[in-house]
Image 1: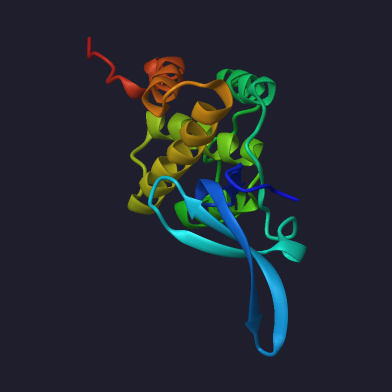
Image 2: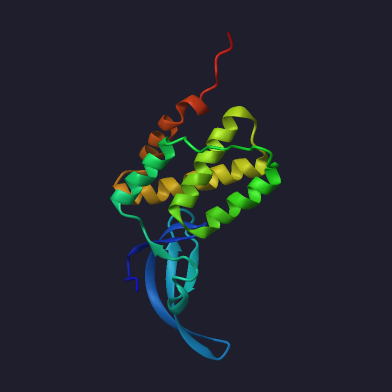
Length: 170
């Protein structure tokens, strides 16, 4: 059970704060709901208390887990890129990973899209997924590591400087 004012993560939405727990009657059934306000966009969600784990509501990761995620971003072994996949199939796969709520899946999407973008221009949809993945990662890690979001993003961009900076022509 989550407590009032606790920071939680809702899949594909990001970090939110539990504002209250309230009972509501919907369809003749009374149930308890977490009222969660997403920090980045001020959206309010009602998450059934009984179903919170099933929809992926979870606590913000620990600092230790946050550092493991940053380490996983540095590791480029196993990168397959876009080998034979079209952008549409990748888009669907990456969208599902972002919806999973698993921070490691979000990091995977971020890393893949940054590395793919080094070799070819990303589609509009892929660019949106990249932005969403970056926001989800930096938002959660900023809370886990006690740093502001811009600092976390700068750390990630530094890891991928070779990918993000245009290459000089000889």
